[in-house]
Image (cartoon, rainbow, N blue to C red; front, side, top):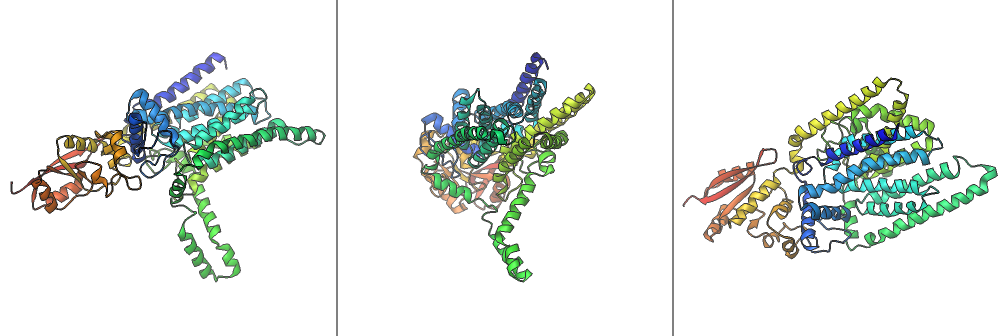
Amino acid sequence: MPRRWYWIFFIAILLFATVIRLWHLGQLPVSLYWDEAAMYVDVKSVVETGKDMHGRPWYQLIYPSYGDYKLPAYIWSATASSKVFGLSEFSLRFPSAVAGILTVLVAGLLTRTLLQQATRTKYTAKFLDNAQLLTMLVVATAPWSVQFSRTAFEGHLGQLLLATSILFAVIGLRKTQRWLFWLSPIIGALATYSYFSVRFVWIAVYLLVCAVVIWQQCLDGRLQAHRFQSQLRKIWRVGLKVLLGLALFGLLLLPLLRSPLAKDTDRFRLGTASVLNNDGLVHQSNLYRALAGNTPIDRVIFNKYWLTLHELLKNYSDNTSPNFLFVSGDPNLRHGTGQTGLFLLVLAPLFITGFAVLYKRHFWLAAFLVGWWILALLPASVPENTPHALRSLNALVPLAIAIGFGTTWCWQRATRTSLKFLLLGIWGLCFVWYWWFYTTIYPVTSANDWQSGYKPLAQELTAALSQEKTAYLIPFDDRFYLWIMAYGEYRGQDFQRWQSDDYKFATTKSDQNFERVFFSAPDDVELLKAVQEGKQPLLIGKREAVTERCSQSQTFTCTVEEVYDEVMKSKFAIATLTPKSL
């Protein structure tokens, strides 16, 4: 391929990926979800005061947030973008969009580098160019990548940094660019400061890729008796470098591990329902043993640990199923549309081709990609909720590399240009259908999953408070207060003066925080007393709940104003209460 055409396609793919990821970024998905709203509040506070909502410095390594303990890298990057663009949904999601664009670039470069460094085949420049560009196109059009590029998920930033770290590890093992190797553990540590599960995945993937490159480059793919001593010296020299990189990674994680919130964070993460803490497996084990006769063999076969392994493998099968990968994806509509897989369906045969050809031609490279995939799925397979597109995001790049290689292999062997255009045409049609659904149907079908209506309700509540009215909320979500903090007239200095209970502001102490906002709906007697004290009470909540409460009131006449969400659905209501005696 002439270099001019290579650069034209290279720039075109990056521009395409950029447009897809930035178009209406602040409005699609339609609203912020809980974790995004919490980060929005922290970013708002840091931009205004240099401290988070709890008054802790911006450079802290664990943000308490609303009690779910977030790592700092994404909040730092969102703070930077908010200083540039101003605080908005766009600026909050912008770092993830940039991560998505850079993932397209990194995946292509890693494909090229692995084919050069982790194999003994001397591929032509044309083959390497095609492999790089087609892998970039795989990621650019992958619904998996597009979905998470447009939302403020910390794991999306983490997967980019993990892949970038592996790229520098491979490049740094070259004789001419050894200094780049030390960027690998540094970026790997930064990835760990982005997403918790990376700390387990990075170590194994790093050691695995280094082992493959050492085997192929230092040992030429085999041990030779007449060169054993020289090969041993190479292994020692490069192996020591790899271990020093691992030590540097561990050293950089010490501040995180010594954080005052580290134990609370681990306790919170380990408290998630998973196969490791499933008490039901113990009861199941005892039941099976009793039914089988409780012999020594029964106690071995129906051991709790075998049942745990069985559940883990079932979860792995969910996360590796063709339906999840290419047909319907994650049923959680925050993680996908529910109508397409993680990758476009047209790429399924190329996925199989890629791994099959790699296995036959480059066994150790295939083993590395499969190993990376399996390791990346561990954080997604231990919890009980499977399949899970977010927790398995670290597998995006290795799967894209396999698909990109399979596509390149078929592309090179297509004797007719019409076949290439046919593949690109079907590929394009699949993406157009996905993008049409994502921009027209998905905003409506996924609105509830994105807490639609919370922002308009918070804005209406803020307007009412400015008129000296008092709001009583019929409980519908104990995290709604985050939207009041995000879109209300409260400032970072206000948050930092408030009291919290387990890092939550809307609790029994909330009446001291949100002036004239009460997070429970009192009975008519208390509401009448509030009127006698000169308050103008409002009843706020889900439309059905407000309507029902008003219909049951014997004391007040309600003037109900409906609040529409971002897709123009009547979801909430605000009732102005007037005593009937008046």
